[in-house]
Amino acid sequence: MRCIDAAGTAAVLGGAAVAVLFGIVLEGIVVGWAQARVLARRLQAMRQRTWICATAAGAGLAWTVGMVPSTLMALAGDASAPAAPTVEPPVWLQYGLAAVLGAVTGPLLGVAQWTVLRRRVAGAGRWLWANAAAWALGMPLIFVGMDLVPWGGSPLLVAVTIYAVCGVAGLVVGLVHGRTLVRLTSAV
Image 1: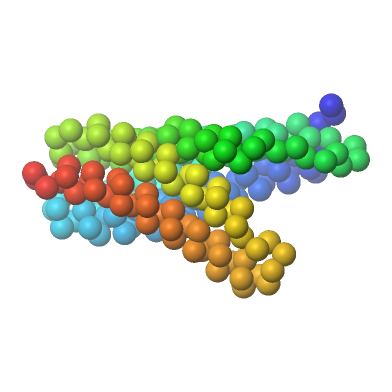
Image 2 (image 1 turned 60 degrees about the horizontal axis):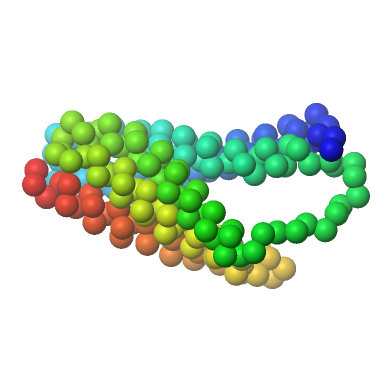
C-alpha cells in the first residue's frame, strides 16, 4: 500500500487540525464558559478564565488524541488506487469502539479541569471518572446520530440534524458529569 502524496497529506493533516480547533472552540471555550458561569456561584475563589482555559486545553488534548486513528487511516490510504468498496465493521462494534474512545478521551478532556478542581474541592479525582462515564455514553450517541444525518438532503437539514445530535450528546454528557460536579462542589 502506497501512502498518499504530499498535497493529500497536507489536506488530511489540515483537516485534522481544523477539527481539533473546532473542538477547542466549541467544546473547550463554549462549554468551558457555560460550566465556569455555574461554578463561579459555587467556587467564588475560582476565576472563570482559569476554568475556561483548562477546558480548552483538555478539549485540545482529547480532540488531538481522538483524531489520531482516523488521521492515520487517511494518511495510509492510496489516493491513486481505484476505490475499493469499504467494508465497515458491524455497527455494534463501531458503537462499542465509540464508547471505548469516549471512556479514554473523556478523562483527557477533564484532566486539565481536574488540576483546577483539586485545589478547591475534596475528591476531585472523581471528576476524571465522571468524564470517562459521560463520554462513554456520549460518543456512541454521536456515532449513532451521525449515521442518522440525511447526508444527501439539503444543507440546512444536514446542519440542523448535526446540531441536534450534538445537542442530545451534550445533554447526556452534561447530565452525567454535571451531577458529579454538583456533588463535588456542594460541600464547598
